[in-house]
Structures are given as C-alpha cells and as structure tokens.
Image (cartoon, rainbow over all chains, first blue to last red; front, side, top):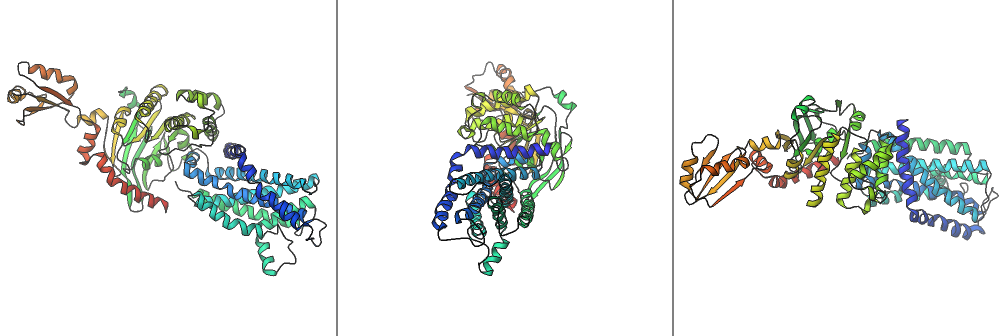
Length: 252
Length: 335
C-alpha cells in the first residue's frame, strides 16, 4: 500500500507535467507525422510488401508509432537529469520511500506519457488510410506500445542515472536512438535483406515491438506474436533491472 | 531567547551523535564529532564553508553513510532505520529542491503523498498561510523570489509534522530584510509548534539570534559548544573603554576592584573588562563621578570573537582555505 502510493505519486508528477507542456506534445508529433505522410505516401506506389496484402503506408504506420514511443520514452529520462540539477531528486531521496519504488514510478510515468504520444500517432494514422483494427487488435497493439515505452524509459533512466547534464544526455540518447529505430524493421520488411543486416534487425529489441504492434493493427506480421512478446518482455525485465541498479547508485 | 533549560534536560537525546567520522578518500570532512540535542532546542552549527556542517546534516538525514561512529535521530539509527529517521525529520537543503514547473500547492501535495499523508489539503493550506504564501499557492514556483522559495521549502519540510527540522544555511543568498523575516518564522515555529531545529550557518548573527546552543565547527571538528552567551563569557566578558585626560586617576580608582579587570595603557584611555558589562556600565561610571570623562564605549564580544579566539582566524579568513577543501570534497564524492 505504501509502496503503491509512492509509485503513484512519482507517476502522477510525470503525467501532470506532461499535460502541462502542450507545446511539447504537439512538437514531438511533427516528426512521426512527416514520416507517415511523406515517406509513407512518397513510396506508397513504388513499394509493395511481398507476402502481405497491405499498402506501404499501412506497413510503416506501426513502425512510426513505435518510433514516437521510442523517442518519447528515452527522452523522458531527461527529467531525472533535470531533477538532479534543480535538486528535486534530493527531496524524493530523503522521503521515507525506497529507491526502487521511486524508479518504478518514474519508469511507469515515462511509459505512460510515451504511450499517450503513441496513441496520438495511431489516431493520426487512421486519418491517412490505415484501417481501424478490431478491439482485440487494438488491445494487442496497446500492450506492445506500453512494453516498448516501459523498456526504453528504463534505458533512459539508466543513462540519466550516470549523467550530470542535459546536453550530454541528449547526445548519448541520439547516438542510440537512430540505429535502434532504423534497424528495427519499421521501414522495411525483414526478409530479402542481406544477412548482416538481418542479424542486426533480429538483435534490435525494437524489432519485436514493431512486429507486435503490426500484428495488432494489421493482423499479419513477420515474427510470431508470442515470440515478439517474449523477446520484448525479456528485454524489458533486463532494462528494468539495469535502470534500478544504476538509479540505486546515484550519489548526491 | 532563553528558554526553560530544565525542560530540555528531561530529553537531551532527541539526536545523539557519537564519535562520528566521515572521510572522502583522504579528506576527513567530519572528524570524531559527538553531541546530543534535546527536544525543543534550536541548535546551530557555526563554521566556515567546508567545515563539515552539511556533511554532518547529510549523515543525520540518511543521505550519506558515516565512515565510522554512530548517529541516532529520534532514537533511530541513521544507518539501519532509515525510513523511521526520514519520517521523523524535515529537511530544507542548502540548494533549492523544488519542482519549479509545478505550483506551490502541487509541490506541497507531492510531498504529502510521498510521506503517505491522507488529509493533506487542510494542513497544506495552514502551512502556506504560516509562511504567507496562501495567495500564491496556485502560482508556478519559477515565478517566486528567492525568499518565497525558501519559505515554501520550510513549509514543505514541516508538512508531515516532523519532530525535527534540519535547515542547511536557511538564509544563504537572501537580502537582509528577507533574512530577518525568515528568522522570525523559524523562531515562531520553534516556539509555537515545539519543533526541534538544527541549523547550519556561517553567519555569526544568524547563529547568535536563533540558537539556544551553538557548536562551532572547523576542519570537521567541534571546537566549542555552549549557549551563545556562555561562549562569549568564556572570553572574560565585554570591554569598556573610557577616554579621559586623567586616565591615570581612573586607573587608580578602578584598580584593585575584584569584579573587573583594568588595564591602563597610558594612551589617554583605560580598558576595563568585566562580565555583564552592558548592565554594569553605569555602576562603573558612578565610581568615577568626579573625574572628567571624554567618552565611554562598550564593546560586546560576538561569536566572531569566540571563533577567533579558538582558531586564531576570522571565519572569513578561514573560508578562503576552506574553499580548497570543498573542491577536494566535490572531486572525491564524484568518484
């Protein structure tokens, strides 16, 4: 009960701050929107996906949703760096609350805001030609979206635990984000690529998230949904452990 | 300022520190420190920056582990009973720890939630009123002045009704008027709510005005600990300087009296040292009724003089060397 209330408090603070920054919500929708519209429609007529009865726009929509969650969740770690700088972290560390609960609250808060960001992109995609999946499809997509958010928020917290300034944090995160996104199979099918590239896509945890969302939204995927779930879930647990470990080591 | 000391004696051990040592690599930040603090007391740590005041507070508030020694807060061990210790204390850190993107009320609310408080709303309103921020409770903290932020932090530190409040340099960087205002709040809190207050400061006047007892700390060691009055009296009392064309005559009249100590440097004045000089200056002058006097000046010793007498340096001089210690400390704690 006490643990829940601590986790809830930290979660609540993150969500409260998210809704307060409307410009940031709108701003971070820009990139996924242009990806969907320009790349999606630009390549729609030239690319057909072998073995799937879907347009290219429909094919990349889950990938772009995953991208917006990836970016939003990783960057949510910057809040921890800011909390260190402005001292708010001390206020939470001196409260009668365990660090594990603080970390879980922070991770759930970041995952929730990232999920909302993903839902907004999902809604945008419905307006540009993606068909609304059935209820079970939506739930499967949301589940994978949340798992991506929680896993990569934990990665963000792990980085943020070791960083002292926001610029450094952003540099490091950007360095990781782009390969993770481009290798994830968000933009291209997983077969008919060179072996070395195929290898990289299969070790990229985001691949399993994209495939999971794709299965939910389109009903077809290249990786079996249970395998995607297991791989992403395993990555999530590893990242939660890593994030907690590093958060626990923060010195003030 | 003097409170009923007998009452304090009943519970002298709300905080008990025994041979506390904290080392950062080679640097000894806290060096074999022992003291106890009683319920309802305002206890001041006075010393230059880098003397070990903040480190001591960090250990008492469970944020740092001592290298050796023991510390008990409200009867709980700071190393093994962190959660109970944290519930017993409110902490106002030296640097601000507010979320500036949230309002005053939201900052208070999050604090209340973290401490598992159920009926927060009334308590929050009451405390914001106490620090005169009730009209600004829905304003974002980033719009607040330095003094307002400090007041909000003090209110927040009291929200969960701790028995003990730690104030680390509570008026650092504030203008004189705001400082005076804050001192009033702190005294009021202590008097009305009975909160035991432990503050650190490198301002002499702050330590003197607020504290029932002062520990003078330098290079990690407590070098003197008593009431401000007693500390100053150890210096032998205040100095009365009497200027007169007939200083020899004055010297003759006063020399030999047991309750004062007279010096006659033959420079047209006589220096008289005695205890409680401010009350007894009239008595001294009365003895000299037929001698012409040009001027009388009274020099009451300050804690600065006490610090000087123990360390041979003023606090300001000591701070120049202490800056190196802080740098070393920061380097050490980064590792």
